[in-house]
Length: 331
Image 1 (cartoon, rainbow, N blue to C red):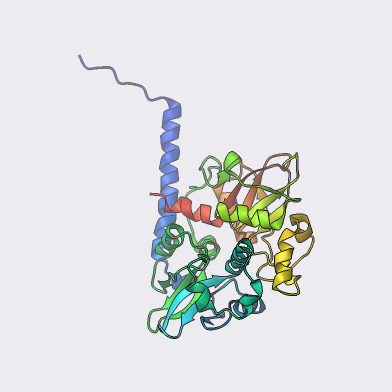
Image 2: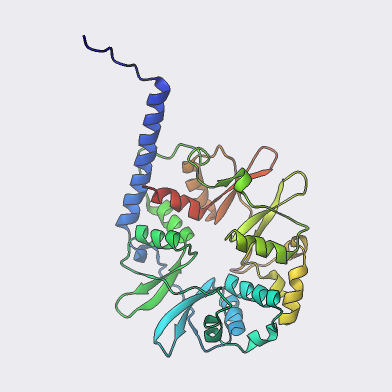
């Protein structure tokens, strides 16, 4: 006698169907990223600033700000090759390093980039990782993700010139603009999909905390920004970014910049800037927002991250451009 068939529960069928749709969504994006190269995300016109490692590190930092650049490749003329990447955040971390060890920060006006690169006590500057124009966007995403990078230089393979540096945000912008899919594959909420960081894993700071302590906290957790919340209620007040140079722009010299590390976030956030190092604007969403709606939101605002809030504006999570890309890299 044949055993009677076991009835499949409706909720099990629904779960299986949902997983199939989610997998199809990830596969569709993965296929898109595989089919497009890094060349496709390059702007029609733009500039790249390259620093010779013989110039002073402080001069390089101010040149970044003057040229409105987030980062610059480092060229070693002795080796005839690129050896690293300098960002605004790197210089801030070097200042913190000097302060922690009680070193003379005025020497940064004369210490070359090469000296900083060869100083074993300073780990801020990274080695040079790049992709060429023919590299697929999926491979570029994997390079960014696996090496914990914010910027990826794109080289011209013919003569190894750096044409641009790309970020997760650049890749998402290209995806939102050019990806077309008739099927509704992205109707699940970002919370249900596990995209982002939530609740106890979320790092927040108060407006009364000193800048030095906040930068230390961000460094410990390898974060580029964090929400500033109201004491007691947890309501979100704003965002503080590691690349915010307000405390440097208001300083008269290096010693003054070090002293400004004792300013509170409230004092820092009260001073506005309008350049490439301007702190990320505060954009929020709810746990109920779908992945599709987040894509549409990104197309409008080109955000680096969205803060997830509840009905009382209490921050409960954060979703970054990196989180979105990482979701589509899942196998």
